[in-house]
Image (cartoon, rainbow, N blue to C red):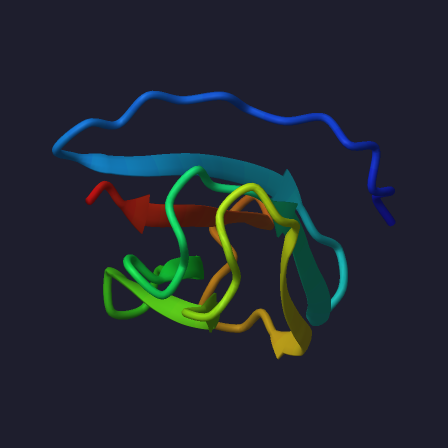
Length: 103
């Protein structure tokens, strides 16, 4: 289980998307995903999404989103007990991303 360590990934995204993608190995059949992030754009102006890559249908599935948090404030996105059947590759790797469209 990971810990929240206040490490931030800074990214400029004028006229694009701010995206941070991460991959990890999972032995179990389900997992809980947490992301604590901040943005310089209010989530009410541009929604922040936590998504997981579905390897069965080759699409990103939304686990959680926020459209209310103010800029420069912690946003907590969470998905509890996610069944990993459609999300693991042959090496049990799961890929997630958090993103927001720049506005």
